[in-house]
Length: 251
Image (cartoon, rainbow, N blue to C red; front, side, top):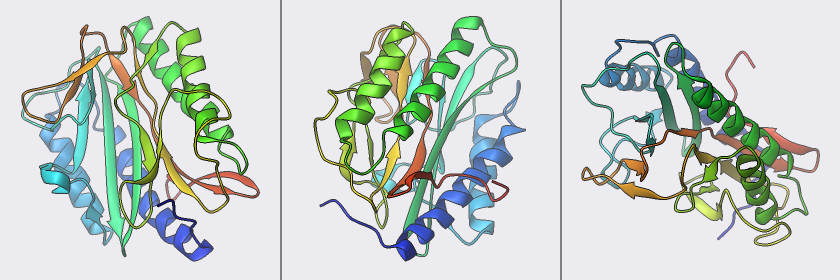
């Protein structure tokens, strides 16, 4: 079932999203060479709980952590552990929070120190593909318009789009209908309506599109070992255009 949210509900989703966005903004200064990845997770959980919310990922279908932290060729769902970030890596950090029964979801990929030009381009193109896709999230357009836009921008720049993982509706559940693929055909799929809240999250690989799940049952890796980037915003579809909800308290 696809939910059409009231203005009151959108405001509640927005408050959860703001906490998540502030969490990632706080973490940004800690993304550097030599930081233990589990420390990022601890900092995030403390921050979310200090704002009266709870980590949405922790315990979700058995996931053990507050953050998904995915380094280099890890696409998504990396479990924070005792390894350390190193200069030259890229790291995707995905975070969710629940406040008063409504959820927020947001992800960014960061460079660790100086990264090579291919990784820098991958980060830029993935973020650009998200922003271009958000522009298509207007009433009367279709889910396929979002996916087509992501795929077109990624492939025009020599990258590939993961097929097995998609964006989603969000609200009183972390994952709701409809699914929001990052590939597709324009003017196909579910038609977008004012009041829908969705998470758009391009996952773009530098090499081939194929991925596999690691032995931990969670972490998704590229099959060719090439790096991957991930950016995500939760948005509300309104008659005035798309409204990004996952922005920090300072805007």
